[in-house]
Image (cartoon, rainbow, N blue to C red; front, side, top):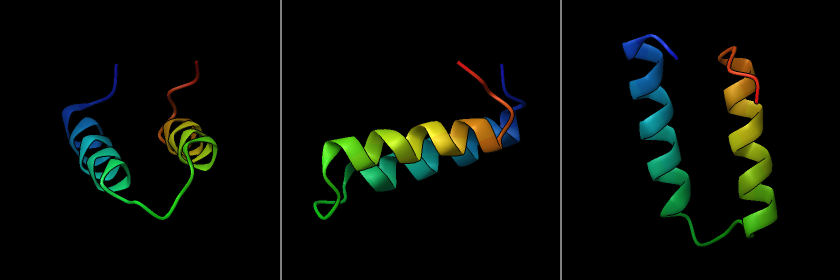
Length: 43
C-alpha cells in the first residue's frame, strides 16, 4: 500500500490521464506502470 499522500497523487494523475483523449490505451497503460514503479509500487 502507498502512503495516503502518494495514493492521492496517483489517483489525481490517473483521473487526468483517463480524461485525456490524445493517448492510446497502450500508452496510457505504460504511463500507469511507470508512475506506479516511480512511487515504489511494483506489480
